[in-house]
Image 1 (tube, rainbow, N blue to C red):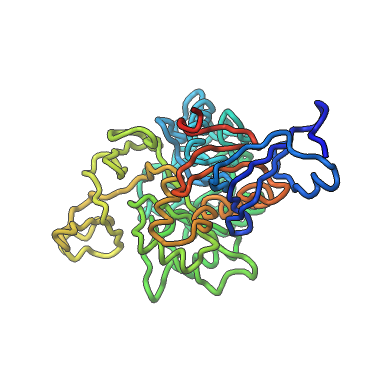
Image 2 (tube, helix red, strand yellow):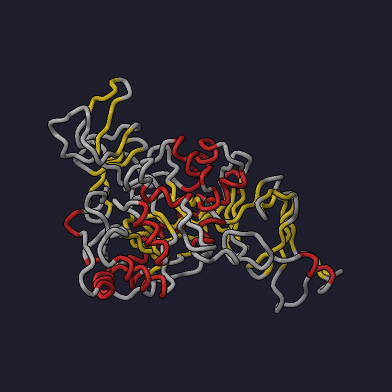
Length: 449
């Protein structure tokens, strides 16, 4: 056999001494790449009678599909919901920096904003391919403003909207053209929401249910209309109740359309979701779990005050909360009923209790506002918290989000013909290198020496 010859043929790379995540298992096989795609070596050998132009020894490390983050609000001081004159440069900065987290594709996310912000920002963030410049943009995720006031979380109440008589016209008037949009989060209990869900899905836009007080019946009806995703499960929705599990009940519902599963986002940062809740969700519906960061502009910075859309947030350690509130304890509970610790003042929706003083209420102290954990940290925490397999943890950050967006033939997989977007990991799942289209785009410092 001969190595490739001639300038017209793309070089063949062979990654050796590695474990490839393929078909839900880690396989001791080589990975072959040509022209930015995963190559079938048998065809190369027996049909083209060629061998690799270059071999790269991976030192026994794991090669997994590149991570895909479908909910990230910004990072490194960049806020996607700020209508600056050069939005694109901020997106490019985040795209470049998250390569070190193993992220090869993402959906920049805008929180609830006034229409003029959407009209200015959306046209400036087109779908783009990834490369040495940064992770690829798969389309925008618009989280709000058509959400519940009761479960708005860190979304500014002044800019929340409901659907009027001509519901989809309302959507277009709020957002402007939807050419660059991939996901819209809305509350399904809002009047005329099903009309909007049908219109959005007909345009190839994924509809996600979140920031909602919907009961299970309303959530099931939304899925029957076309919704396929749940935004950060357990957060900003009614808590699970045995007589009406609410949106959470979709994980095991028997009222979904035949052949249609539900996907759900989980923020596995150690703050937003208790490990027991992570385990419950994963064991109930492992195939639908999608790890998201829900990262805010403070990602990669430090303690202090930062922005999130039209509001300010305060970062204290690993927790981000709406500015003006004291730091949020790590043990918190969201309620829709009167707090038993302060029965004379049931007006607040979020209450926190001190583990050392059960039942002690600290009124109005825990409005969480996104995460500051990178995707690779979420993968490691999810693995540790659930006790799942390494393969399951990696697929929750790669294959599952690709399936959600209908991209599983080219993203989130290392099957033959797929895009050669992958991450090189050590046994503890720390990122050692990131590749996009078979090209090295980031490498850990010690690996360069």
